[in-house]
Image 1 (cartoon, one colour):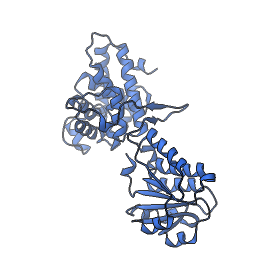
Image 2 (spheres, one colour; image 1 turned 90 degrees about the vertical axis):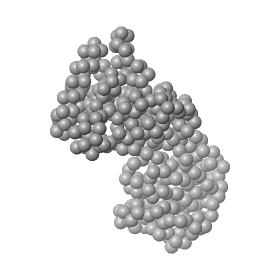
Image 3 (tube, helix red, strand yellow; image 1 turned 45 degrees about the vertical axis):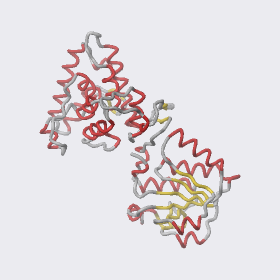
Image 4 (cartoon, one colour; image 1 turned 135 degrees about the vertical axis):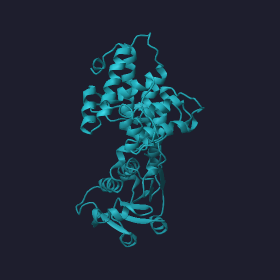
Amino acid sequence: MFPEDLKPPVWVLRMGHRPGRDKRVTTHVALLARSFGARGVLVDRRDERLHQTVEEVVKRFGGNFALRSGVSPKREVENFPGAVVHLTMYGEPLRWHVKELKGEERLLVVVGAEKVPGWVYQKADYNISISQQPHSEISSLAVFLHELYGGVEEELSFPGAREVILPAKKGKKVISLEAPPLSELKKEEGWIPDEKEALRILVDVGTPPAVISHCLAAMEFSKDLLARVSKNVKIDERLLLVGSLLHDVGRSRSHGIDHGVIGGELLRGLGVDERLAKVAERHIGAGLDEEDASRLGLPPKRYVPETLEEKIITHIDNMLADSERVPLSTFLERMRKRGLEKVARRALDIQMELETLLDIKFDELIG
């Protein structure tokens, strides 16, 4: 999901900025607005240093965030083609108006750095408070955008990024993207991206960071499996590794059962090898037959893994809880609780088939 997908679009007007005193606070207002999905920030005083800082962040972490400084606040408010929201502790509680705000065509959110002139209160369509107590304008903006967009900031992706920060229990987990932006990649029919290009695809189509982390874990699981398997077993290693990385690309659009179908369509639209599209399409659960698909509201079609690479990827996916490896029994129990006994049986059959063919024990790869 991209900030451009969020409705209504939001721009933030920062009033009372003092370059000598407020550079860090106004920078944080801009960075908060960007990371929570706003389209851009307008600042009333020209500040070259602010421009430089925000532009460096956008180049490094991606997206199309806009910054304009030196604007006339009154002109911006009067000419804005949408509703104006003023965040102030003297306003009405956000919960009184959040549904109404969600229905607006576009919003200009005014946050002040010093005392805001009276005309702002008069011209604003909404004077909104995030509690009637003094606190930071940054926290007010964060709560406002979080409530307006339903807390989707963790799902946002910023195309063109050079670096992506992934969720981590401890320490810092950052991946660098070495492939050029997706628009610049050479895409031909039957194209199998390399790992760097596949990562670029995930980021630039809008895959959330947590899903990217899961996909990287699936690829590492596949690498560990390949290190254990006899060279006499014929596995297309590139197809397996890149397929592991791209299997959940459809979660850039949906986390529902339809994300496999969506992923297949998305990859076909990019011109990648049909085998990768089928990996995405067939990895759900342990595969879905036509009866399962019809019952779940998917296009009536058989989505059951057929090739060795497809079976390995779907099985590895079933042994991952987010990015952590777990025994297959965890997946089986979850499926049975949902009444999907057929899926559970199929998953167990795939494990038995793969362990016999590859002469490995998947539980030994959990470690």
